[in-house]
Image (cartoon, one colour):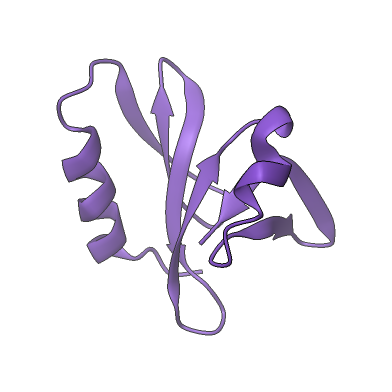
Length: 86
């Protein structure tokens, strides 16, 4: 999957004021980490649309999925719990 630099720039700008942020290529895009733990990510999907992915935690996942824009994260054939994409 191609990296979407426009989305990455938006995430970088939003996180710029926070200490402990790093980046790593993973899960087909660019992920942003807080003190080494994945916080969010951005990538362009097969359909050509750029999307964000957020770590919401398993306890908050059902609440996050009530948003009509949010969807479960499927990586290959596996659902990744605690993550939502929009």
